[in-house]
Image 1: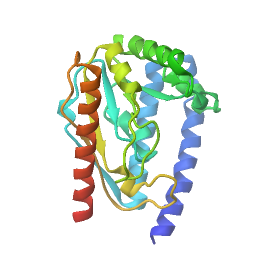
Image 2 (image 1 turned 60 degrees about the vertical axis):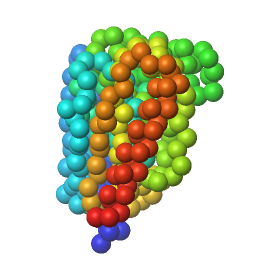
Image 3 (image 1 turned 135 degrees about the vertical axis):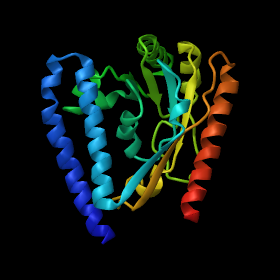
Image 4 (image 1 turned 180 degrees about the vertical axis):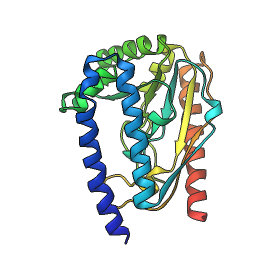
Length: 239
């Protein structure tokens, strides 16, 4: 049954993505927020499909801790799931994504429309400077800058490898940071076909104020996310 449900979901998920990709084409000619509203509806539809087909629910904790206006979001990255689910809890997110994705048909076009922030891996100091300048521009108009500080998906419970670029961004944009822990990798594992039933928990942690030394910020951010993610994983295994 798990295999069958996973098969059905994966087929429906990508069909749903294709349908929404076509449905959102008219938003190219409308203000950016028209596309963002459509992207939020698409994200909600994915959560609904996951619940109906696979029995996978979601619980968002600590949403009251999200600061108003523009801020930095540092999210644990275990699965493809959070790349769309965060649309459901953030007002106007600007995702930091590898620049190669901006050349993918439809995805890249919409990334430009959403004013996402490309990062050129291996681009050195120039790439870091360009990324931070774009992040500062978007944060200045009240957007939430979403970055996955591990740089890539990490299996639930695996040893983390945080990249220091987020500390440079924190220092550059001069805003508070909302760390986010989750357990999505248990139910939507990276590079795996199966989608498991249960409850994905996303927890917004206590914001880190602006103005800290970047080394202190980096260690604090990592410690909070890892400690909370380990706790959520333990809760899941005990259920």
